[in-house]
Amino acid sequence: MKRKLVTFLTMTAMVTLFTTGINETAYAQTMDEETVVSQNYASGTVYIYTAADLVNHADTSMGDNYVLMNDIDISAYIGNIAGMQLQGTFNGNGHIIYGINGDKSLFSYNLGRISNLTVVGNLQVNSASFIDIGGIAATNTGTIEDCVSQVNITSGGSSNIRVGGVAATNVGDIYRCKNEGYISGNISEVGGIIGLNGGTNVVDCENTGAISFTTSNCHVYAGGIIGDETRFSGNTQFSIENCKNSGDISGDAGNGAATIGGVIGEATRKGDNSTSSIKNCTNAGNISGTGSLGGVIGNINRGNSYMQNGVEIPSGGDNIVVEGCGNSGNITAKKSGSSSVGGVFGGAVISKTGTIYVKGCGNSGSIYSENGRSDVNIDVLGGIGGAMNNFGTEDGTGSYVYVENCYNRGYVDDNVNYSSDQIANTSGSNMAVTNCQYTGNRFKTDADGTIHAYYPDGTPIYNQFIFDGYFTYYIQADGTAMKDNLTYHPDGTHIICFDEKGHEVFMDFYYCSKVGYTCYFDSLGYIYKDQITFVGNKTYYLNANGKMENSGWFQFANGMDYGYANADGTLKTNQFSYDPWGRIVFYHWNGMVARGLITDGVYYYNMDTTDGHYLGSFQ
Image (cartoon, rainbow, N blue to C red; front, side, top):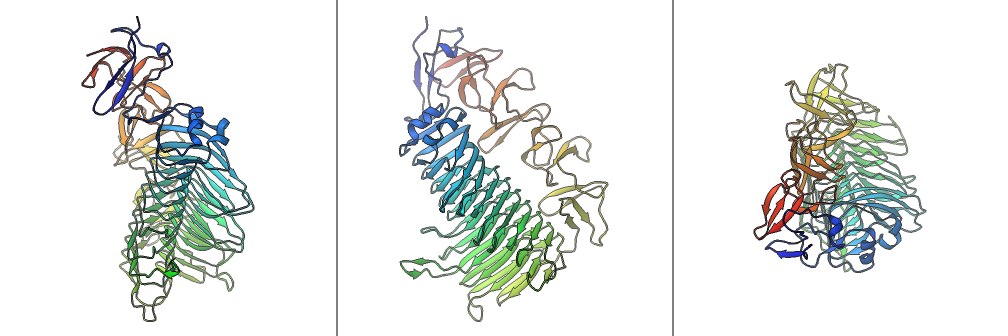
């Protein structure tokens, strides 16, 4: 006879189990519509199993702790779900929300915490007024972490809008998030992660989606990570660290101009005595447009005035530090106007007390102009920076611009009005460029993306690995860099990979079209085979061929153990769930299904020794 469900409480978790007696198989259909809750969640947690479950909470203040238990498709309920306002927490639990569409973000406001969530869909916005649209949230004042947006966003209305791949406006913190969707249309502020940032921390974020804009008579701020970094009340400094962009950024601002950066469009002072930092960020995306264009930052602006109660907030020594950042993408100044272009920054402008400090940064991308030498559209191209200007006090006292230990390894078009291997144009006093000479190997990337490398004397390089300061390339026998391919390491044993940009892949996943699946490469660049790996708080398995498992139930290469991989490659871990036949199993911390006798310190669970399905429990 089937016994009643047994509920037990440990110090860390509450788990609900069904038993049918020792050595009897438990099937899902015998559970009287109850479900095994399979994680260590706090009491009172709200579990979301279906889109209909989410509808039941979407029009509330959402102040509870919500956990998504399955992948769900919300397309049939979009009018009841889009635009949610979260005050509690929403844990995606490694699952995916499909079907976001229309003209509203999934969350209009996040005041709490959104984590471990992937959102997939298409937003087509046709707005007659200025609004915020984000792939996950329109406005974030809380925390968003470990999330992925695969939302394509297009703006086709009469009004320009603000767009962020993850959040349009951020006044909170964003950690370890990625955007893979493209963004296009009538946009005035746009970032692969954030459109307008006034928050404190943006760390370990990545954008791979392309960004393009067509905006008339409006200045556009566009960045691979952040479009416009600015001040919000109460925020005194920002930290942008370990972020990377590989999405191309291009646009036409009509009669306006654009400030475009591979990482940040414009970075500005906060208005208080503070030091803000942009550290260890890279760009591999190509940039094209008119205005202030930088491989890392379009413009560093320490001149904005901020008012509070009608009184300007004094600049007591605001500092912006850019350190350890690099660019390998091509930058092209378009014909529609004059541009200031730099491999690291397009412009660095200061007019308030404080310091702009750029150090240890580099460029290997190529810089081009479509204008050539012109009396109308005058381009300024610098391998490190386009222009540096100190408009502080008459003698420059209190305001400084320093560039040190930076380099340019890329090609700079010299058929323009102003061109330099370092800084193309400077104006003002109290500025210094030190230790930025470079005499080593050079790179040139053609307009079609073909990469060449040269020795200091201009001789082409062949059949050689070469490092640009941030990325490793392999220059083949034909003098071009290998791309999107697996090959053997020189040791003849280990397999390594070069991505679509020609960069060797280290400590990252990469989908290689040559084999048709995603692989992982370690700190030496070697492919993982038959290995479990941990990235952040997520677990993955690379099988004997090096393929990341991502198609449900699978068997490990040892021929004995089983696991379950979600569509994003994450394994089910530390939880009870079901196998493909509806039987209860337990997934260990490493993703393997438990076999034999296991215990939580209170109960013992008898799991089948062959495939791990649950047989019974006892104390």
